[in-house]
Amino acid sequence: MRKFAEQLGFPEAPVLLPDGGFLFVEMDPAKGCITRFSKDGKTRSVVAKTGRPNGLAPDRNGYIWVAETAMRALLKLSLDGKFEVIANSCDGEPFLFLNDLALAPNGDIYLTDSGIAIDELAPGGTLNPDYRKLRYDGRVFRIDPKTRGVECIDRGMLFTNGIAFGPDGNLYVTETLSGNIYRYQYGHGRVTGKRQLFGNVIERFDPAELKGPDGMKFGADGNLYVAVFGQGNVTVLGRDGKVARRISTDGSMPTNLVFGPIGDRKIYVTEVETGSVQILDVGTDGFPLHL
Image 1: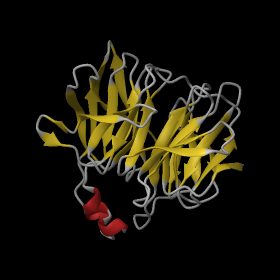
Image 2: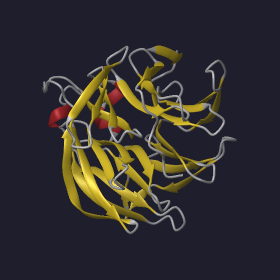
Image 3: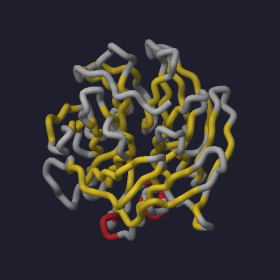
Image 4: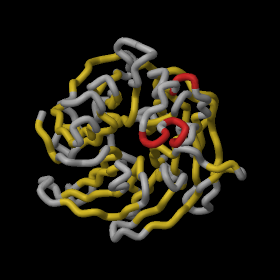
């Protein structure tokens, strides 16, 4: 393991750019920005300050879609720093805590909302000690980027978080407080049916500890690589949903990951406790995103 970048304020949402560089978000209130890094990590620049950007996803047209927690809005961002609000509610119900997003094969955007206001979960930036007793209504939305129509495809989960499409063509979503990874059948441009339990990444459950699955990506090997916040590792689930291995991080709070360029066979992991991006050798490239 080696560090790609350091001195980041609550990093999340890594994105590999076509030029080999990267984007990361810095969710620390003092920064609240999307930061661009060169391929070697030696130079960085702020693309945009939006408040508290959480999830990022690139599309085939060169835009970056942003799950913006503070604005409670889905943003469309260009790399020159300009952005616009695409959606902030569903059927008149405002978003609460936008978290992560993924693009479907047909270009639709699937977006997680953790289902609780951030000021209730962490008033003043400090985790509510009764966080497990709070009411969560974690949701998953589908957004048509052309019409800006928003559809809620599921709700009632305990802090929905990471989201990704798998090699099987189906949609996967993490539920942080339970440790569960759910799968949704996807076909003909739509999610069909109810969520099904795919696997769980918690090594030893302790209700007093905040730990659980955060961001995730699929490898070309068909395995699912999950950053487990509070557990200090990337947990790898096989095609059967069972734990195949655990890869330790420096620091206990990994938030997300992205695979490097083709042939790199490494993941770049954002980690909060050390404020860094760490490079871990995993022996496989990433499964191609739907660009």
